[in-house]
Image (cartoon, rainbow over all chains, first blue to last red; front, side, top):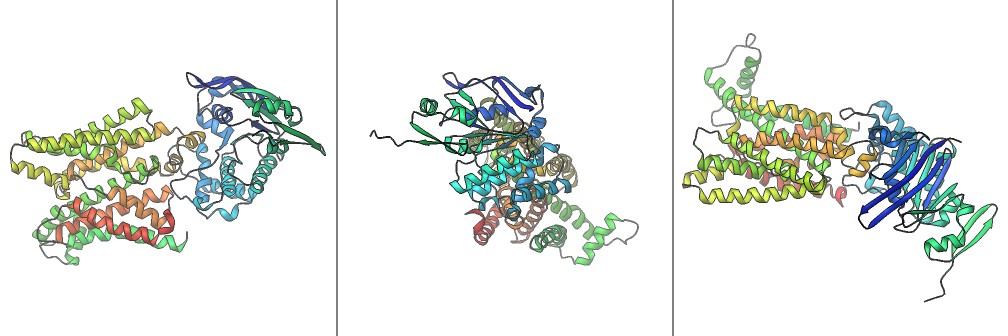
Length: 263
Length: 338
């Protein structure tokens, strides 16, 4: 397996006493769906933003296992990482087609306009994700799940190798959560993208949709490995401060928080 | 392209030459369309068309034509910079004046009219001060906010307030009432001040390249309107590109406002009307804001010239015309913003 991303000694401090990341290290291989798991404030989003260089951290990220990511221009970086934000707050009611088309920006200069090929790319991706019927709609009319698929489509149109998703299920109900996560998993397993890294706070969904879990607490990596190894009740208790029960069924690991009896 | 959008596009495109022709006809001296066309054609092809009488030629070519062209340039500049700034600052309520330009220009003009000898051109002082005001706002925004959206808007507001106060002070200290009256008139805007071919050439020399740069970056404006984080994730450096575009908008607005005085609401209103008619994609909005801005201003200036026997101040007229038009469009398209 090819190493698509290696993170070494990544640290980030927002202000003097707010350390968001401390010495984060992990590797992602091609074909993997990695979940960065942890409670609110654990540093998941900060980690994604540091990998994307939206923030300037200490430490190094190697892409494709060898190139330092600070040697690349932001345009080259945008062709490697596709960022899917939690949601998009739009001021202007763009048509979905035009919105997805903006994902072609890294393939253009400041003054160039999208060509017929760029439009073909959008249609191809929309067909892949089954959102062709949304293309003529306005992005302000979309539901949470549809918006998430449109944002994923924009990242695919970028021709990114690695998808970085920031809490893709934060605003979704269970049906749409499963739909979006299945799409992400399918994209990775079919080889359309090399890997996907998702920030999530729900260990239940993380267990069933990822190959690797990176469990974080207060800016540190507590555990990293397969869901089976990482999602143990004693580890989860340490991170979340809540008791969990673990079941195994047909090779799947299921963790469920236990209702507290204390008042 | 759907018919629903093709019709307004054609309408907007043909309305500009039509508006300019209408303004060549209008005025105290009566002319008929045929003579006006002959004048225009004989100016373009002097050997082919027999020239009409000298009086008509002078009136059309030295008074009405430069006035219409000056109005068109002003409208295009104000509208396109409004469209660009609304997208870049992710705020549908701004126009170029948010950058401190209008109050800077107003202060400069007032200073020149009130205290400087008449040999110093008012437009030069106005131009310099509007650029100074913009640069102050820009430096302020960069020094504490790294050129972010909020920093730019707030710095603009601060600089605006400062120069408005300074302008009030100049008015208060103005040595005689005639000069005070001139200041007041200047502030209400007058296309007539710019209606000379040599002034038009100067306005064009600055605004044409600026408009072209914005027009070439029209798709990029879509990406910039996504917000800084998403723009950067798409490989765009929003602070640099926004800085460049803002400076361009400021430069060309200064160059026109210095000649025409302050004309409000065009930069705010025209891009909105275009969005309501043709959608939000900036590839369309920028292009048609240029055309429709020019048309709107030419027609507004015709009204200013011809509505009453005295000329009305154009800045007042654009606002009075704009408000009801805007309300009508908002009501008709109430689904878009709710």
